Image (cartoon, rainbow, N blue to C red):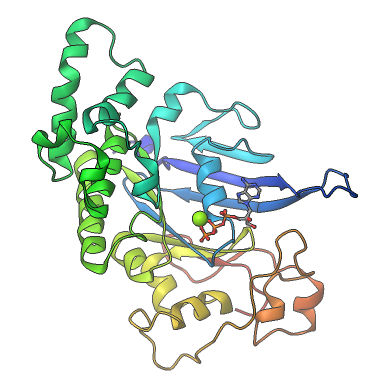
Length: 332
Ligand SMILES: Nc1ncnc2c1ncn2[C@@H]1O[C@H](COP(=O)(O)OP(=O)(O)OP(=O)(O)O)[C@@H](O)[C@H]1O
Ligand SMILES: [Mg+2]
């Protein structure tokens, strides 16, 4: 094994992404707010990092910033040890090919007028992987192979997305995402739109493909059962920052941050430690454009003290696990 084998597939440092606040007719100052504040994390080769957090905390923004859909305001993104040219236009074509996304809604992400063959041929054509007529002829074979890999039939190639169920559509989205043999897939709630049984099937398919093609995943999901079954590591996001991260078992069995404890407590099938005081989240996520001073979580935290109101907690490592585990809380 060489040192190179330990290079994370993705490492991001202090990533910040802001959006403009819509200016009103009377107030035309261009103000922005940070949807992602200062996020640092890494994904090891062949592993899955599960990303959890309430609606609006910035998960999709983070995923799409990594995928190059958004240009970032600050920070660094290293892909397989190579710093991507950050800020505008960091996204070179080759990297784009190696990082692919799967979206939540398979109904919206597949063009209804295209055949499955056209949908699956698109990545090859966009990335000019197909240069000569011989290779052009091989596209239908490659598309058929992709369909087989996701458990569909090559006779489905001439059909349109409407002719498939939600689970089958998500299989097609997955086939499209793996077409160019990516190293990293950002799966943004890939199973949220599916029923429990289909959800399980898609989770199994993703796990199986990960091993087969040695891919890594950033898995965004609300369902902690999905996170537990698929991820080696977990990061917990609150109002644009990571409040806790580490090995999935450690985080889900003994959550340290009060916010993580509340998330785990809200998922009874995940809660493993009956001695834990159950934390129930009250109130809504604060407006990211106007975050609370000090620890962003303090207005909702049952353990908040004066210090939490005045001082933002720094990220610190806890425990003595081989894999890093850390938390941003004064008292966790
Ligand atoms: N394109 C955009 N322009 C302006 N604001 C945006 C844009 N995309 C997201 N936001 C805002 O950024 C914040 C984070 O949104 P984001 O979609 O990343 O959250 P999320 O964690 O993915 O939520 P959910 O779990 O509901 O998908 C929200 O306040 C959202 O309104
Ligand atoms: Mg989202």
